[in-house]
Length: 172
Length: 435
Image (cartoon, rainbow over all chains, first blue to last red; front, side, top):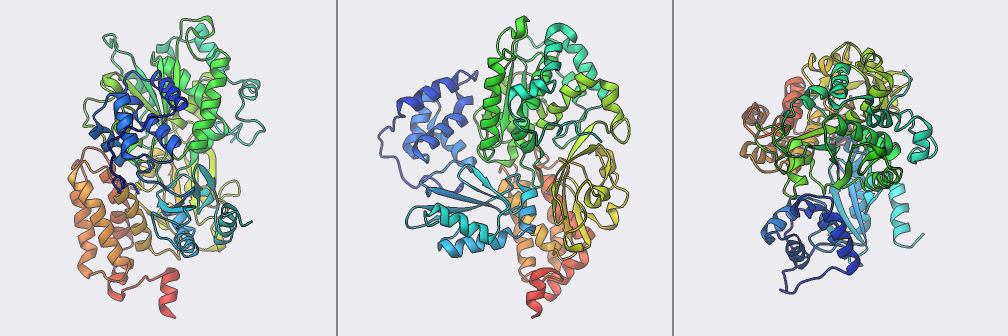
């Protein structure tokens, strides 16, 4: 995901933020001596508002912060947590770094792929789930660790994962 | 040892400010703001305590503060709390922030006072959504009580603290990478000198300290330098320390002990890891996160877990992330996994690192998958030697070669078995291949 450029090109139209997001952006700007320093927080606001960051959102952020769009582009593609295209309702992030790896994270990922019929960085057809393998998320003592959107689920095993996916699919 | 940093973890409402105050919290802050210490005196206390940075480098904290210029020529001084905890195997700062956020905030406040800083940021990794929310709530409580803001408690002390979320990049834990990131750029480390103390964030003098380091400061103020410096193995390795134990042990977790706890005690002690899962034998231990050289089972004998103790074994304490691997782990497989991490996280600035980390991963993958050639084993060593020792702007590259280089050196026979027999010598994969 982090290595994917914007999948949808700019339509040349601005994508304005809703008023409540604009208020948050103005509040954020007060905390920093430069507008550029607010770039990461403002990109977070964009992602929370729209679910992902489109080329148009990025251009709007550049306009608000008075930055070259190329700078925003460079920052966006450097950090792995900004979604450059829409992701599923539930973003499954399975840690595969060493402690989780030793605890069977590889099998967990394989199980997840099989059950959902998707590969790494892919989204199910119903748009419900996107799967990504991630590097260490500091859940090593509760390995294997994973996150769904902003919540940790740990320690995980195949049975618990099945239960979680059932629940998130509205089947349980 | 009594719990110090973890004393309040597990308590009901450990996050709420009233509980923190009832336990004596913000007492040190009130004393300091009320004139109990001048900034210079507080810096001197921290120096005398022997506190060394808990983020990985183990640099004496008070000495670091002392690098700030006496005359900043009107520029503000910034304090950045490094909460980017991303070193594989490390999860202590997450616990501190999620369970006792006010201890961290009081530590930031006291340290900011010591270095005459009025604006501090807590740079927290993006994945710690809960940590950021908990800190934000705790900061709002502290502002409401008048512990932060302008003219704190009627004094002329002013301090603002802001939580700043990262967005997924290991390199932002490197202090100049963190500074770049806070400025709204890619987190690519800067060439040093100039060091952050002279030219840091926004071109101003800046101190970057780890969460656990800062959390020690209220205790130093409350209980004194003598108390703090008597905890630990010797005068160079002082204070309470959080150890992150993970891997194939019975009871992984964050454990607090005096600096210099024996590695075997951490793995086998009843108060700690309680031994190896399934009674298996230890094969290798990573004593300081993914960036540290692996130790063999023989090397973990008499290994005090402090900066100098682990360094004497040819590795490093780093972030005190102890990852234990049992005899069933294929060392090539483990090194391949670790190389995946470094390959993914290289910031791409310096050629030896940008090209070297994926190359290491590629060679390790082909050995692991049974496609390796005999000469690949020495190729790994050659690649490593071309990536290290000052070839790059930051030490990421030196960290990236630690797992392959130390494992090839110490477990060479396993690598040779791999390239000769096209499979692991041990582990589940070997068992499957034998069937």
